[in-house]
Length: 100
Image: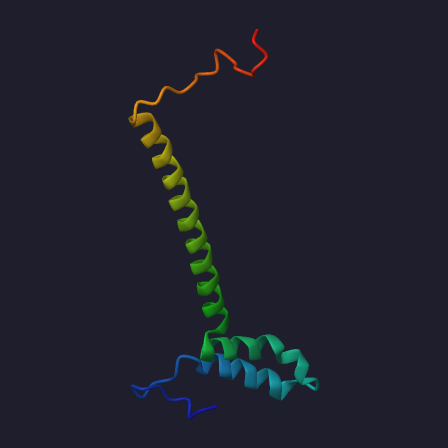
């Protein structure tokens, strides 16, 4: 760990997490028991979980935007057909070619 001092002379933002991890590590016989504290400290330093969440949110947003754009394009196609004055069937007469 670095000196523990922040840019302005106070404690660094991750110092509390480092203290929790070092306390756990000093008190335990099995260092694997301190996995949660180590994960918290590393997340504070590197923001890996946060970056993953942000990337996932951006991917979901892009998918949603594509879906909305596709729906809007389909809606414009239908509106253009209706605006051109093309007669569309309303389903009252079915033309199946049997000549009834």
